[in-house]
Image (cartoon, rainbow, N blue to C red; front, side, top):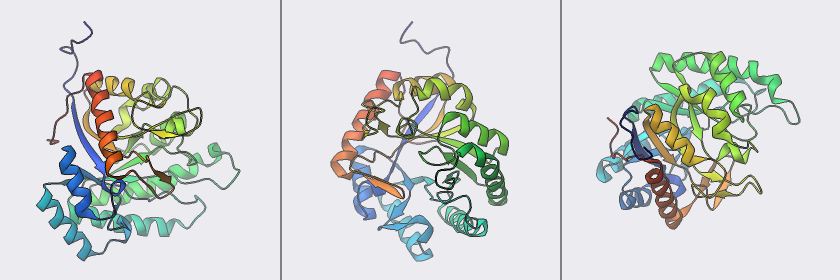
Length: 291
């Protein structure tokens, strides 16, 4: 029966959001999250400062604001790995170490990372092995910290298509490197039917999901359901798979840049409403707290 899920694994869907998509000011971010009933934050920037540049005093201020507004941090949305693969690896490792130190201070177990940019006009496949070796070094550090790195797919990076993402994840071969499926970035990279292609080879690596959408025709970023990211189908498959994790809103409705994006207050309301509508169609029940 269409609406009968008795034989499926029990699943848990919890909403999170990138607060800097709403405003630079943390209190304004948290006020909107409270307004839309989202209790988790993906931390990319606070007070306009990238997470890697936050000092310990700012970290303590952030923790105080989280307590005041009953917000928990679900993931550190770091920019680590959004650099040329030919850049000095020691700099990347140093930055990652600082991010992991911040994750300890904030009691967060997941850190988002990326798979590096190839040199301009070079074939990405030529750099998969080098990406794997760099990520193995990064994973060794994450193991020391007992943290999980989650690799995001993104246009322009070596891990931009389902096949290349799978190859990287498989070759690194560590439980401390998992996958964060960005639903808008596959169509933004020109991947058609990304869920049809990606689910069979990426399902077992998915740790969390970032929600935006994009049209293949003009690569315009949209709210969930108005693009070609097959979000409804992905949520249905996640539900059937017994998914237990976050759907993190990263709408990018007003600005989509290399180091982040912006949506605004009204845009975040629209994006949240659209996602909850698709969740309802997919038979996904929202839970406020991940246990």
